Image (cartoon, rainbow, N blue to C red; front, side):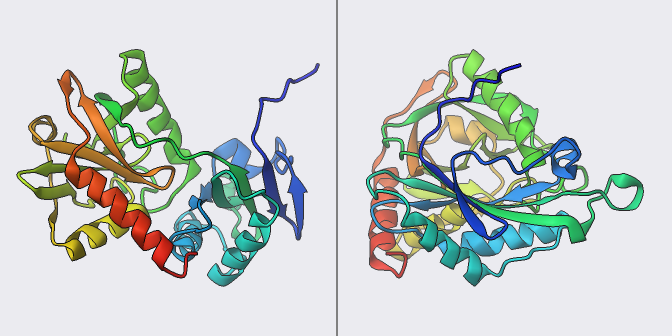
Length: 292
């Protein structure tokens, strides 16, 4: 049986002390992570010579590992150093996604929990162009974000993403680019891939962290930058109606940083001045810090 490999961008992966080019095989059918989903990751970005908040992304993957019962084997500083070493393998023309990961190789007690001593680490870097900030559409998903009582929502865990995936596919089948996902109480949580903001009468608002979604690193950075610039920014419980009545909506996330939303359900929006300023402030900050 021959398995055709999907087309992939330039990729380098560090695992077990060495760098390997391409989509290197690191899991087997008996690997606990492949079978029972015990993996965590984080996502940093390199673009235009900078890697904003790389230290925070590197620290968060360790925190996620601990939350999932894994045992981190790398320090934040070691992950940062490895990342900059690996970035030298690319031509510097295309943005790179930075993905440190931990996973369990073996099960522990009764086979279902992970054996922390079997935790493995890899760092995968691959070319991934930034999408242009022209905007995207969102549809309200029938699927909900889990709570901390039902899933490890305090970790950036791989097992959380099939739920996001089905939300995105349901929205796509209805003609939207992404999904607006609610929490179990019916309040807005995030999109299928990013945190979400609205603007009403110049007031910037975003869902308050409530244990159902990660308070993203780019989200926190954007709140800080907008606040320092003089915008009123508030984290609060927000409804779908709040978003339908918003003057602007934009998302923040590591993949493309700050991007406007141009349609929510049947309501069209224009990319607004606050989203534009948020993106400008982020780029200015990224290029003026030690991220360079």
